[in-house]
Amino acid sequence: MALLQKKPEQPQVDFSRLPRHIAIIMDGNGRWARQRGLPRTAGHAAGAETFRTIATYCKDIGLEYLTVYAFSTENWKRPAEEVSAIMGLLKKYLLEAIDRMERDRVKMAFFGDLSPLAPELRALCQRTAEISRHYDGCQVNICLNYGGRDEIVRAARAFALDCMEGRADPNHLTQEQFGGYLYSAGVPDPDLVIRPSGELRLSNFLPWQSAYAEFYFTDVLWPDFTKGELLRAIAAYQGRSRRFGGV
Ligand code: FPP
Image (tube, rainbow, N blue to C red):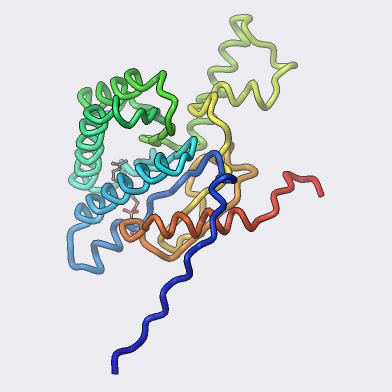
C-alpha cells in the first residue's frame, strides 16, 4: 500500500501586510551537495538557482527589499576552488541581471567591501548598481565580502574622520545618523531574517540592522528552499506581535 504523504499546509499570507524587508542567510549549500555525493560547488550552483527563484518571486509579490548573504568576510578561508566557484556564480548572475534589468526594474545594491574582488567582478557590481540606481522595483542587496562587525568599525572610522574634519559632532550623534555610515544607509532595517539549514545563529549578518527583526529558522537547506517556504516564513512573521520594546 502506498504511504499517504501529508501535504504541508498552504501558508496563509496576507499580501497587503508583507514585511518591507526580508534578509536571508543562504545556508546549507555544502550539506545539500554532500547528501548527493556532489562537490560543494554543485551546492552553491543549486543555491544560486534558488536565489534566482526567490528574488524573482519577491519582486513578483511586491516585496520592497531583499538582502542576501552571498559571501562573508570570513568565507575567504574556504578552499580557493570554492571561493572562485562562488565568485563565478555571482558573475554569471550579474551578467544575466544586466540583460534583464530594463524589464525587471530590480534595483541592485551591494553591502560589503568590494575592493578585494577581481576587477572584472567589482566592475560588474558597480555597473549593475549604477544602471539600476533609479529603479523603483524591489531592491536586492547582495552582501559580498560583508561582515557586520567590519561594517560597524568602518562606519565608526568614517564618523571619526568626519568629526576630525569638522563635518560631524560626536556629542550629537544619533542612531539614525550612525546608520547613514553603514553599507545599508537609506535602507529600512530588515523586518524578517530567515536562516535555513537548521543553524540557529546570526553569523555576523546585519547585527546593527537586525536589532528588532523577527527571526525564522528552518531545517530546509537553502538549495531546497521554495516559494512555499518563503510564504511559511512570512506567515510566521505575520503571526508575531512586534512591540519594539513597548507593550
Ligand atoms: C553558505 O552555505 C553559502 C555560501 C557561503 C555561499 C552562498 C552563495 C550562493 C548561494 C551562490 C552565489 C550567490 C548569488 C547571489 C548568485 P555553506 O557552504 O556554508 O553550506 P554548509 O553549511 O552546508 O557547508
